[in-house]
Amino acid sequence: MRLPVEVNRMQMADRLLSPKHLVMVCGRATGKSWGYGEKADRIARRMPGAVIGLVTKTYGMAYTGTLQSALQALDSLGYVRGGNYVVNKGPPEGWPESLAKSERTEHTVSFSNGTRIIMFSQAQKGSVRGTNLDFIMADEALELDEEQYKKEAVPANRGNLQHFGRRGHHPCHLHHGTHLTTSMPWTRSGRWILKEADYYMEEFGCDIFRIWNRVVSVQQQLLDCTNPKQFAECWNEAELIRAQMPPRVSCSGTLFLLSNAFDN
Image (cartoon, rainbow, N blue to C red; front, side):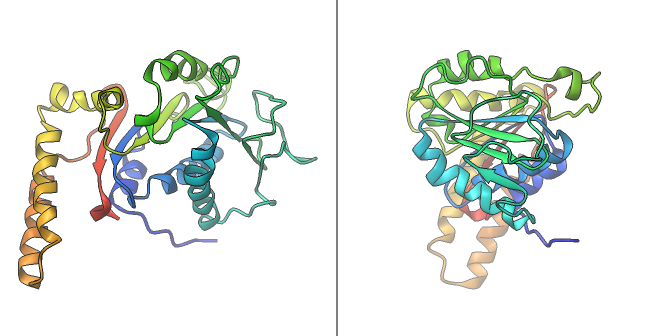
């Protein structure tokens, strides 16, 4: 069965380039949370039995924002709640366990092929320790404590090399990857995520933030356009400027993307 699924520019870049590490800095209404559901589908298909860690500042943020949209994405892809996945429950009888077995049932999403999403809140320090993860997702990374994330979550991204590693039974390039999204940081503590874009200048000689600021400046003019011809001219100008910063994957497998509501 084929399901028609529409994706925007940002989501298409992730699908086509399929980086191991994805970092998206984008505003509201850009489809960030939908991307988590699509990525969970991709991981479930390619790494059945894998454990995905979803790291957020609080569980409340995970449920009201990230998880709700991610599950809607899964539903649009043909998943059925109670048939293909369950929320806050362990695998029902007859469903396989994840490769890294866990007694935890709260704050989890269990899939019918053993794949599992486990949510972790930074408000509960140390909750990630002792867990073997195959992939990490983190929403609103600007809200996360950088040191805590790197000390607790990153080292846990270490599981099942014998299954999904380069020499494993079912190797997958997404294994031990990451998917981080955030709004544009407005404080110094959240700007650590922007360092992930340094490779644009180092590897491609592209000043991505200077170009992006020019794109946004032209886009702001669109908000005041009442003349269709003027609107088209501004839109085309923004696209020509943006063409100077095409999505590129770094040598280490990172794709950094900038986006806003105009892309959705």
